[in-house]
Image (cartoon, rainbow over the protein chains, first blue to last red):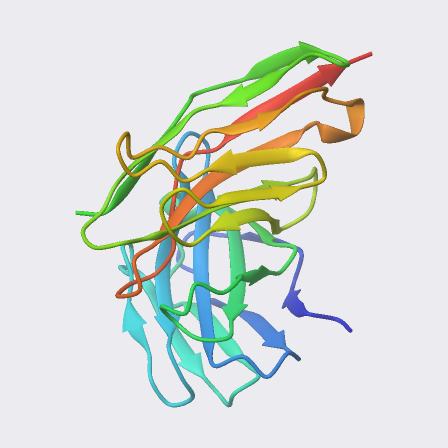
Length: 114
Length: 111
């Protein structure tokens, strides 16, 4: 059982370049999330998707877009990368929002923007 | 708004020492409370949870009790091991929004 799979694991971008982070889960979860993790700031929610076909902004959505391609996949796109987006990005999924259920996390993508 | 305040680290302990990591929260309604652990190079994984006041969550020797009167959910372990070295995150979910995480506490256990 793979759980939540993120790709790539590492990426270096130049300022202004674009890229898409991929995430897929095989647990038939309705809810999926993208977080960024920065030193001293914990995890901050970028976007989430409560179900297939819906997406909503989280705490720090500026500079990002997302697509809930189907129930399994939730991608995060940086259209024009900036050094401030250097971070570790985590995708997560859970059975349902507000159901006090466990969130499962991918292993993360370490992104450096130079 | 909803938030979690977590004891800042890093915390360094000798093996078999007692561990406490403090966590307090602010929330409207009745949140569920969680502790997640992140081992080096990995994503977060659930350590334990409590969904209502006075509940005690426990796993792998770790415990935390949901205290509504003090709005706290402190993590404790009686005897830490080197393998417990990780970053620990307190989190809450109100049912109306996403998981709110604390800033994380890095624990290092030395032999």
